[in-house]
Amino acid sequence: MTADAFLERYGKTLSAPVVLVLVLAIVGLLYTHSLFGHGPVSIGLQAVAVLLMIWARVTFGLRSFHYAANPTEGGLVTTGPYHYLRHPIYAAILLFVWTGVAVNASPLSVALGLIATAMLALRIAFEERLVRRRYPEYDDYARRTKRVIPFIL
Figure (spheres, rainbow, N blue to C red):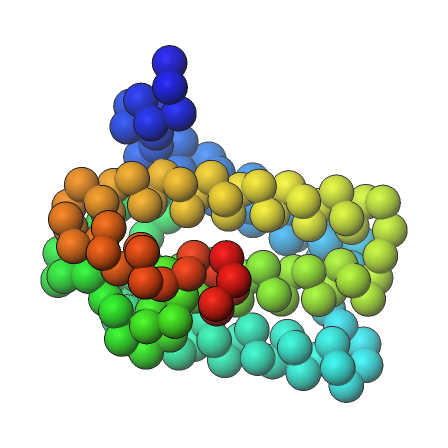
């Protein structure tokens, strides 16, 4: 089975367990005191992550609150942070998590950070497949907008 066929068949179903594993990884970082920054630079980066998350949530609206990958009605959002990133909420999570991991580095915190990153990568793959099907203009948007790091990735 190809990756596309797998995403087509199981993406929506697997997206909820992926979110659960992501939440467990973040709780693990919290439990091991590896989630939050300590100095002005790390706290500043995490504040930027929170602000990006808020900006993305406000721009996308209430329809962004769902646990399973499920494109919603209302059209493709390409304004606000979505003008620069296809997945600003996930970018914010990655920035927050990896800032905490960087300042509290341990083998366990790095492993939990990698698990969180892998779960977000899966979630992105699931969502993009479904959004492409619902919104044909997504391909053009994807060509001109990076996934999670402006101008890079």
